[in-house]
Length: 201
Image 1 (cartoon, one colour):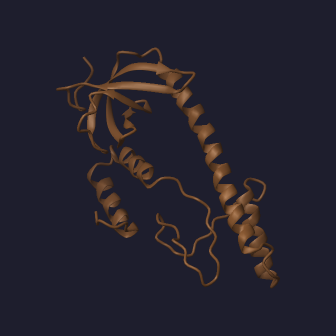
Image 2 (spheres, one colour):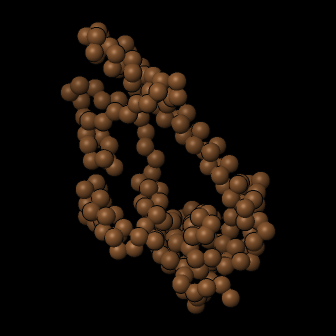
Image 3 (spheres, helix red, strand yellow):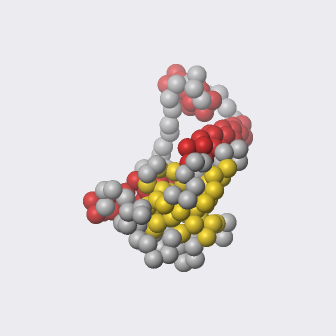
């Protein structure tokens, strides 16, 4: 991969990775999505600069579904209707900037609730399997911690022990050491000397 962000190079890398390892591709693509981070709503004023959509490798981009589903879609459709009718923009630039920030914040808040529910459901699924071992792949590694996703069932948790030197994409075997349903915490430890291709004993 090049040193600077390049969506075309990323697409080529992912296509090659899918061809080389179809089984592990879903975990790799999940890791890449996490590394890219969440998107946000942005306003593109005529004549101004905008980063565009990195994943699609386009500068000019808009997304809209049904206006009864999301407020950003209602805003987009109002803008389109005004442009088609030849009317003035129904929003001032500063108003659009404020709406973009607000919509991003609201979507992030909703996503946070969804993630918490998913994490608690995953912990509930695993709470009676403490001590079992699983094939896993590292999906995140930073100062905040190291995260792994087990393959079956496909659940993510924190690697509490045995994470030294782990990098994103690394396959390993882990043991489930705790599952807290209320907080949605799932903790694993790495199993030294046991490859991810080994079967549970």
